[in-house]
Amino acid sequence: MTEQHKPVEKTALSLSVNGRQQSIQVEPRTTLLEMLREQLDLTGAKPACERGECGACTVLLDERPVHACHLLAVQVARRNIVTVEGLAERPGFQQIVDAFVARDGGQCGYCTPGFAVAAYACIRDNPGADAQHIRWALVGHICRCNAYDSIVAGVLEALKRVP
Figure (tube, helix red, strand yellow):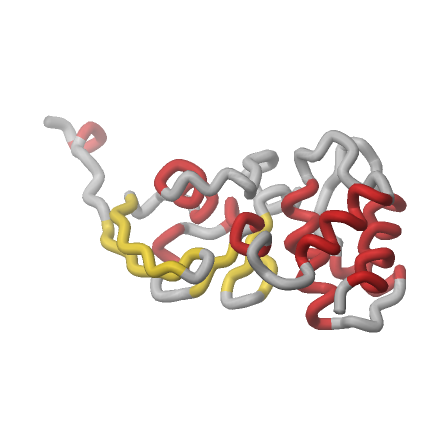
């Protein structure tokens, strides 16, 4: 067998995903996004640019928003990951989703999970955020429908709704 056709050895990982301990095997080149989607069947984080530029794959890593396509799974061993599916179980997240819907902040919906995760972190960390602060918190997120004003309006609406 030639060097380039040799099977890649997998690495054992232990991590917490949405509050549940996971032990899995991954190839060293597997991204966090690939692991979440393909091995754990958590498909809320979306593949889009796969370069860490669009935000569609945003998850919380130790409670901070990160682009899951930009990290290798082995980099997050023994860390806490929360996906949009995990946020759905948290108090206050449904109000964010409702506000996005009310303000038409998720037109086609593809980027919405990433924006919602980032909005959750923004509201949690800055309950008095204004529109300018929200725009800064959402830097690195792309909406191809150009719904930015609606998304910011949705986050402002959510600030009023989240206890």
